[in-house]
Image 1 (tube, one colour):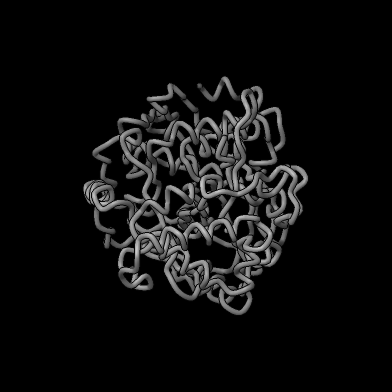
Image 2 (tube, helix red, strand yellow):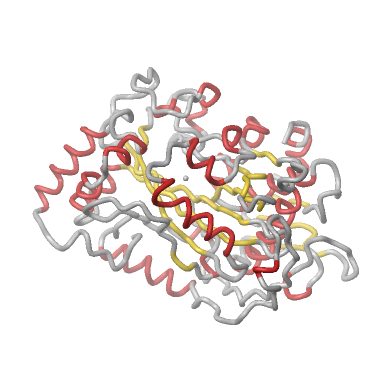
Length: 448
């Protein structure tokens, strides 16, 4: 499917918070990661002006020299999803939990790419500005996210064509073409990108004035190139970072319309993130202000949802796991009220086979030309009964859940989600059958 086929529909609309598997499976996964990953580059970026001399809300584009991106030895279609299990036994500690991110692991694709693409295309086409938005300038406070949105699609096109060259193919403009987004390594800007297995081609806008709704178009394309949701944070004149543009197509538990335009602190407080003010706010704000172009990071998160049986001919055929919107847990998307309703009429009776671990892999990096901070969110869904088949996993997860404080439990749906008793009884049963073994709080291989 080409962008041109989607364009009349999309452009007519308005314009963004895993232990190991069986030993043999894990070995194959780690071999795959080792083969496809190179060390983090220690080469310094191009010179940047003293950060202390920069005023809040101002950014001078950085001519960042990217480290070499190693081509994956296998296409996404041959790669199994990485089994993220981001929990430890024992007490739950609230921290940012960030780790350094090798450039080769910035965007992860796997054999679920086509399914994600289908779901995301459907939601872009049917939900429009409910999943993709670009905020205008707020004069005197914060710039629009438009320039960052165009920069992002060019960054993704450059990266994906190098990381997965048998899946993504790009063409470039003539050498003298003016653009706000020059190609990597001095190359001309990208003109188009093609997803070879799907036969989809997309023409990239050169800048925010390249056609109608260029920034929205850029975000639509970006959303269809990856399996992540994408949020762009822009620094304001007050030093805060504002959610100014995004493609939030499969968040499941939150909507872009409720968060767009808010500063980082209000995004978290409006979502009732526990212990944010006393444990996270100060360190997170410092981190955003100091994040360097050459220092991407990654973190993981998790919670749970319940899915319902499918019905022929319904949306369930497109998204049976409720990846895009967790209706069985939250009710209808358009009626969402920011809470887990105690009595949800569409919620099925939870069983180990209908409860999902919903884990997120989140990355943050600063874009060199706009200075925006890009936040990516990759979601994985794993049935609890399948998860418990992994040796020691039932005991480890049960211990992790018991380590939640009351505030964490409320935030993650312990009492209102309808799944707690079913999950805990099942995990305890499996753990008892397996017997004790190992220190479930010592996790050298976290978050796997």
